[in-house]
Amino acid sequence: MTARHGGFASIALAGAFLSLTSLTAGAADGPYAFKKDIAIGGEGGWDYLSVDAAARRLYVTHATKVVVIDLDTEAVVGEIADTPGVHGFAVAADLGRGFSSNGAESKAGIFDLKTRALIAKVETGANPDSILYEPDSKEVYTFNGRGQNATVFDAKTGTVMATIPLDGKPEFAQYDKKQGRVYVNIEDKSVIRAIDTKTHTVVATWALAPGEEPTGLAFDPATRRLFATCSKTLVVLDPDTGKVVTTLATGDGVDAAAFDPATNYVFASGSDETVTIAHIDSAGKLTLVQTLKTPARARTMALDPKTHNIYLATAQFEAAPPSAPGAPRVRPKMVPGTFRVAVFSMKAPS
Image (cartoon, rainbow, N blue to C red; front, side):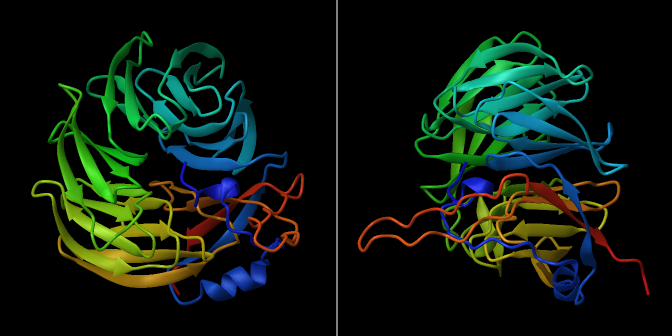
């Protein structure tokens, strides 16, 4: 989990809900507009959101649980418990299992997706953050922030297969079936490392300059392009050559990335209350189509490829209390019961 993520962010933003009017006005210049809020409530921070498009489920990590939302009714339908300090949730639809990265206990949880019951827990490196299911080998990767490594375990048995040193703080990852590789951002090194899924070793490292502090990562297997969200830049990298192809200016502190293969849109959500939306014109060209206005602290994001909706977690916060001279800034408190998911959808053609 990066310092820019979700409710754990260190930037002190005063809290008031953005109104439907203001969000709609900010979205008027492009294809996306605010649709609704899905109320969740409760207390505690949040991190990644993940979509199971086939089962029509959205998983939202929230403090010590994972909230389950029905994508068709856009309502909360349950919770997955016993996930202390959860950051991410990965779905293995072919196995009927889900996997949580529990940062507070340095473990991954294995769950039955139908019953939401815990099957087992797996020891990982320190503070597992993002988590990835690799369907061909049927293995799960946790990317461990303080451990600066990745833990790989068998999705069926929970047996740890490897611990991969990453020499830096890993963030989000993507799987490339064609190359048999997992790509992961290393935030404090401003690089992407490529992991061979057969040998469980790092086989390449690529600099993201001019991008710095990469967090989110999306992948288009058709054009063979990786999209890494950096501090104020979306970096497009060719994983077959390891070269940066192009960049696109974004809002400040972009965090999550998403790619929609049906529309060829790539999304970068940021700390400045925007989502940058660009169209992939070709393998080497992006065109900005919208700077979408979003609520404060809505940095983590997921996309439903069926409806093309995007989902961003957020909450209301109290005003930050004053800090003593020379002391660290005091982080504001979240208003209990205000946690929610903001939904943005494509506007109907006029």
